[in-house]
Structures are given as C-alpha cells and as structure tokens.
Image (cartoon, rainbow, N blue to C red; front, side, top):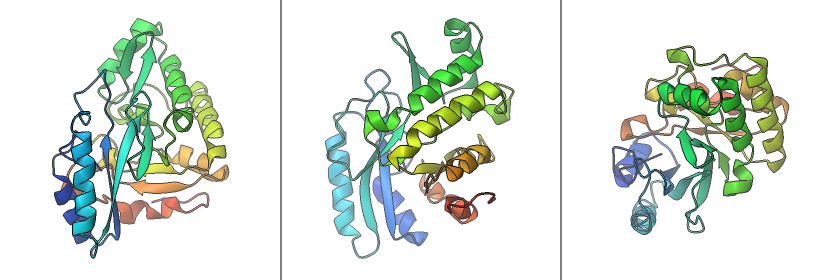
Length: 250
C-alpha cells in the first residue's frame, strides 16, 4: 500500500484506519523506494526516516486494534538501504538499456517508442529483457515478496501491445518463474490495476498463477492500494487463488 509519502493519496494513518475498519488484523504499508533517476513517484530520500518514524508511531498507537508493519517496495534499480524496514516487496518498474531507464508501467506509448528505439520494433525482445530482470529481483533486492510479476502486461486490455499467448512471451515468463521458485519467496497477487481501471484481472494472469502453483510456488494477496478506499480491494474474490492447488478461479 502507498501513501502521500510517494504516489498515494492518503496519509499512513488514514490507510491504517481503513484497514481497521475492514477488519484486518495486520497491515503493511510499503512506500516506493527512492530511485535517483526518477523521483516523480517515489519517496524522497530525505523523507524516508520520517516515514519510518511515523509508521513506528502508528504501530504503537493502534497496537490494540491492528499490527502495523513498515515496508518498502524496493525497485530493482533502487540503491537505498532497506535494513530498517519490516519487509521488502521486490519489484521491477523499469528495464535498463545502456544508460536509459524505461518505465514499463507508465504508458503503452512509452513501451512502443522504446521498442522502436532499442529493439528494432521487436516488442518480445523488450518483454524478454523485462522478465530476465524480474528473474533476478530476489537476488538484487533480498525481498520477502515478489511484486506484480507481469507488470509489463498492464496495458494489454486497452489495446494490442503484444500477445500474451506468444510462444516467446510464454517462454520468457516461464524462465523467470523457474529461476525464482527455488528461493521459496511468495508471489504477489496484486489487485491494484483492477481498482485503478487498467485491468479486469490481477497480476499475475491466471496462466502464470497456474504455472507457479504447479512448480510449488506460494502467493500473498496485495491490494497495492494508493487510496484508503482500495485497501484490501477484492480480497474476498481472489483469496481462493492463494491456495496451493491448480485450476482454481475467482
């Protein structure tokens, strides 16, 4: 969950109160880690100590109502220390080509232009680079949760950016899953793109979830909430997907 410390709308306390009202017994807030090359959406490095202190205060204030965890969504290319956080979500928001950081979740147009500029119009080459980076996210961030595994598919329901059934696309994400599974770190079932109107299904898509389950992988629900209204968004609908058995559906 994100707050006004980064690209969220509400204060940490407002998010905690919403979690209490929704009956949760534990809540984790995970601000976007500082990325020096793009500060438009993330926590500023000078604000992070205050963020940690505020979350510690809220843990004490609401100890009899809910357990509050202070987390961080650590981007693959962030180098800000994570020692003081209770947990880490490891995420890939960019692919790096030479000295350029290309955001994969900002717009379909950015992805199209990057494909033409760096990959000769081959969108699957971009997807392959993305999943190769995701495959290294645990090694890079030492995360406790793998964030929105197939974030690059954010815009596919709004237009034909690429075919998720392409053999090259499937091969790329399967290779990434195979590299991540041995770490025994859970994959996030992320409903954030649904609440914000980009998708009608969570990350990762159902085919990927089934493959992760077949390989013995684990899941954790995350609303990736950027406002208090979306805390625990559709958890009751997707909770069954966290069960480690195949062929489940929401």
